[in-house]
Image 1 (spheres, rainbow, N blue to C red):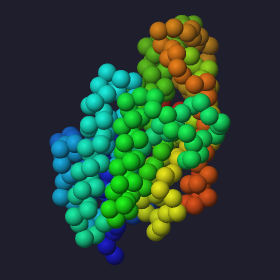
Image 2 (image 1 turned 135 degrees about the vertical axis):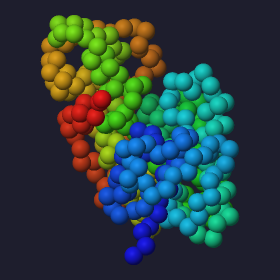
Image 3 (image 1 turned 180 degrees about the vertical axis):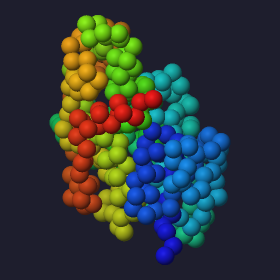
Image 4 (image 1 turned 180 degrees about the horizontal axis):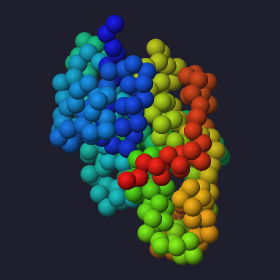
Amino acid sequence: MIKQKVVISGINGFVGHHLARELDSVGIAVIGIGLDAAVDSDITEIVSSYYQSDLSATWPDIPNVTAVIHLAGLAAVGPSFDNPQKYININSAMVTHLCEYYLKQTIKPRIVVVSSGAIYSPNQSMPISETGEVGFSSPYAVSKILNENQVTYYRNRGLDCVVARPFNHIGPGQKQGFILPDFYGRLSRIESDNQTIQTGNIETRRDYTDVRDIARAYSKLALAPKLDHIIYNICSGVSLSGREILDELKATIKLPNMKYETDPSLIRPTDAMEIIGDASRLKNELDWVPLIDIHQTVIDFVQSQP
């Protein structure tokens, strides 16, 4: 039996690794695209082929595939304020090249374009469903809303495009620039349980989902025989504070008495106090629910550190 083939753009990234493993676990042949010269060594065995390509310039010739899951792009919110046009240009160009390529192919795959829960305005009732109010809070968010508009355009041209809006990712292999690895980096530098680390406002609450559960949602969206909607939230439906994540991490690495103090320079003045998403659409239609709780996520993250 010939395996179905699924393309992952940005396969060498944090989510790409987990998605490759998820697809392989359900018998899918994984094709990777990235900027690096080769696929990362820890997933070499499960990636059937790899294409080095700058997707902002072109899409490689990969016909006759079941689906494409488009992870590649500029993804950090903070730096987007310093390079707004770069974010808009690169993130939109990738979607253009992807969709224009498959418009020309006889076999047209399901295309899952990964947007973000960060596009929602926080100034609305929680939890936020797919019909929630969109906010234009950063150049990153603007680029993702542009990507979603591109999806609408290419659907009208005949492509089977859908949008995934994941909320906060967390899990093993995540690099600094996000809450769990940033906390871990600070804790790993202290020498005793009596020291103090600096944090921002860790009472704000966000909807965190383990990256492996998010990868499973992408897989379901890519492989479902049919989908009833164009946009799907991916989230846990509950919120956790930064303090709760820090406490889990302290317990895991056995620094339970470590103290923290707030550094005003680390506080974002516009941070919403709480954001929660609603993934009922994904749960009801594709029977997806998060399976990995924060306790296991933190343990697995710590064990993944070199």
